[in-house]
Length: 465
Image 1 (spheres, rainbow, N blue to C red):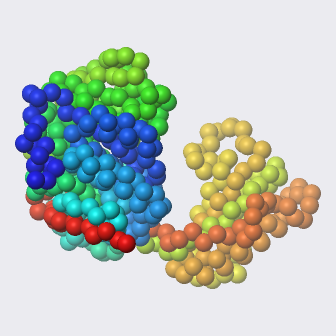
Image 2: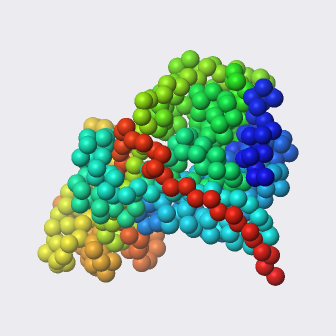
Image 3: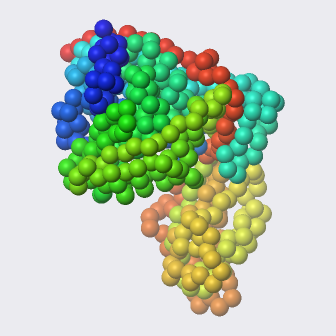
């Protein structure tokens, strides 16, 4: 019997709290083992891990690559897989391989197979593919069902088809479908962070509002604590409330720190959009049980008639080379934006072709625009992106730009050199392909029954001698 079937057979909400262990807030960046061991000693009913995010930008989605180091991905997966299988409890992992597209999902399945072979493990794996066909998205555009998130344009059909990968963020209902197939391990492509931890509780009969609020907090493990960290987090869920406890005895879940987590990645801390509806936190209450633990109650869930799914898609822009330099000359600092514009004009006459430069002046508005009259820093860091169809053209533009900016003459200059300082050479660095988001939208009023593909795999590892 698989782990999900055992749990569904052995646990009911009336039996007592459901113990949920969040082992990693982004698997592949190092799971602290002492906290994981403490968490497993508390006999959790299941273990969950978030593995990805769109936060690193469009590159990993577009390129189909993982952001986390391969060696650390193997280590972390090995830890959580062995811990869950040894305990006989389900393991649920979401947003496989950072961006959750097919290459990411396949790469993580391959790692799980390697671990199974190395340790002679047998388990039932259910995967959720989050890839969405371009035609489906174009159909949503034509039907008026695609809504942008923030300041992003509505793409054309050609732009949608130009995406290297398109994913939809599957939610709690989809992961419940995967769990219903019977699994020891569920591995989802792009998934809502909350779904990883809410699907099993809802399947067992716990309230959707409480399960989602719990999931919203523990998916980042001990980030909601004082001090925040990456240590495993244990939640104990009842029909009325849930209790939060870090498995690091020096990280404390206080009412203030837990409540503040509602601000994490949220424009409105009292309303959280989910595929199936809206989680409302305006009546949530936070109570300290002691200096280390907090109990939470009061979250409500309002279902929508039809689900909405966030879609993400990225397309290739070109090859990127980055020029890195520092500026400390006060006269040059005052003229730096104008100097960059004039030097670009000169370089375009010298280096023909389809290249673009994007300047980021750290210390002068690279992170946020400077307010009128703001004092400028005594020095600035200069990061210039050069993007072109071929990396050789981007390198050429960066190199010629560097020399022209280095010797750019301006009124009042006391020396004929020294505009730029370089921490290392070469100062032009190849920086992979450049991608951009084409899709960062919500697809409204969709059926998720056939949107995400589910697949059950019986993994039977053989020991490698």
